[in-house]
Amino acid sequence: MMKAAVLLLCLATLPCLPVARLVQEGEDGFAECNEYFHQGSPPQGFAAPSQAKICQKRNGETQFATLYDTQGRVPVYSAFTYRPGAAGDGGSWMIEPQLDDAGSSLEEMTNAADVAEHIGNLGANQALEEDYASSDYQPGSLHHGVAYALTNTLPFTPSFKEKWATDVEHLIKEGLLPYCGDGEKLHLLVGAITSGLNMNDKVSVPEAVWLAACCNILEPWSIGFIKQTADLDGLEDVTVEELENKLPAGVNLFSNQCGGGTTHPERIKVSESLRQVEAEPPVKATGPFFRFVQFFVCIVYEIVKSLMYLVWFLVKQICNLIFGRLYWIWTAATTYIFALSKVLFNIPCDVLRVFANIICGFVRIINNILSVVCMILRIPVRFLHDMACFPYYTVCAIPNVGIDILSGIWGVFALGFQAVFGAFGGSFSVASFAGSRFVQRFTGPFEGHED
Image 1 (cartoon, helix red, strand yellow):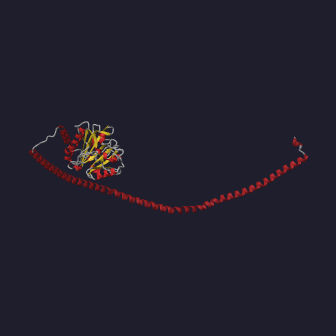
Image 2 (cartoon, one colour):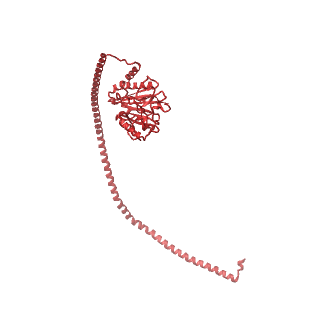
Image 3 (tube, one colour):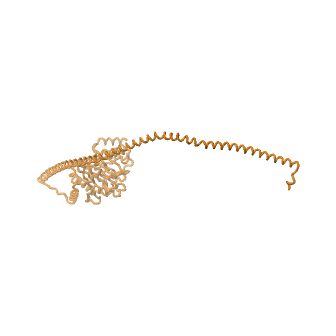
């Protein structure tokens, strides 16, 4: 605990040390380091569970943003803007403690030796200086920023490390800044394409490194560069779209393709300049007179260039004003004619629609009147018809009713007559049978009967 307190006190009393923090989940992009991306939007398509976002600071000011791959222990890409004299001034290599220990209270970059005993699994998710021991590689910075941040370095050979640093410096100063004007508007992305090989079975070795630039001016442009680690002198210039095709599928480096994907306005000259620098050593002129002439020529060149820019700007503004007004007048005239034609065409349609609605209204009124009349007349007509038919049906029904009554009376008498005679006949039959059985009991059966 005492050593940790002393370490924190030392860090607080050294404002020149670099400061970096991991961007936590829920924060927008790279938090305060979003300014280094075009329109504040980081590249899309690099997301992976093993990646961490780092916002690098120095003296309280942001320096660059890095997307770090904790599995390969190398940066995926780094975003920055060019600042003259921002190269690292040496010193010991710094690591990010929270990459290996998410619960660490050390939110700033520090020397690995100072936190080795406080971080149990130090080096599990990031490269350390001792990982480069017994190898042919050295930690090489991706760009001209703080060179002693190990989270911004890759395994480079000594020759490639020096060549890449020179190429990046010359490329930005000679090929990009003169066509963008303001370094703050030149958004730079630099990253690596891994080869599948690991240094000491731990740190991924790059196959190539790339740089993408987006100049966010009135007419934005973009360009990309790729350098193979096996080709020390080669440097290929490509469009940003061609560069994205060499990266993982779905990668989008700049928001809105940096002005629709318009490439560098002087791409051919930049390529020729790079090849010329690589092929010919620079010729250094000496002598005060030549330096005075060079200085005078530079002044005249800058004045002429500024005047040309001013004339071109005025011409563009005048053209935009004229063509803008003409376009506005054309749009207003066509819109007015179209609206007037639509109104004139709708007038007869509306009149016909009104007449049709009036006729339909009269038809419905007549229909309702007839319906009411029918409802009123339907009840008394039926009643009168029934009253007129009542005597007819009543008189005609009297004979039938009388016949039915007489038939009923006759049926009653006939039934009674049949009942009386039936009763007498049945009684006689019973008495005759009973008498014959009685006589036979006493006299015996008759002979004639037996025969």
